Image 1: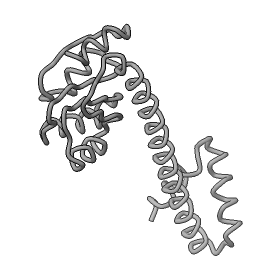
Image 2: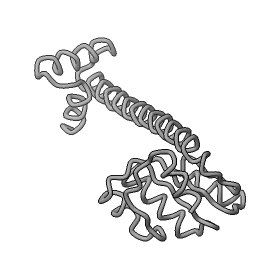
Image 3: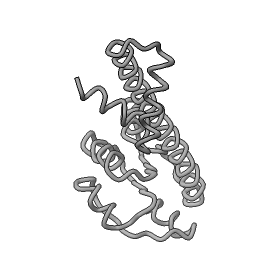
Length: 173
């Protein structure tokens, strides 16, 4: 009730009030909620797993207000994508600031994940290009700069990215 009162007092629109986290992902998707606020006395493993599925399939900032928490519960919740885990003593006036921090934390985490994914993709592409370059060097007895130049020329001639050409060369084996 305190969470709901805090949301109303801060001008938030409550699109749904649900009990439990069963099928949470679908319900969040259907509701179009931008932020998920949970009030749980003692978050269970199943509820945390529901939040993990939500974070994986429909990422949203999740604020969890709990009456009690063990360190392992808090850690599991954070690993499941909960942006803020608030324990005890909720005053309605604190709901909005907590949500704002959670939203910003969520966005920062999502940006870091996107950067990491881009870095992994770039590294995988570079490895692909390096393997194709090595294959050209071996097959056509080219130096490394010559092999790279040939890869670049092929990519430019066809108007595709270098990793695409590299993949095609490696598929020719």
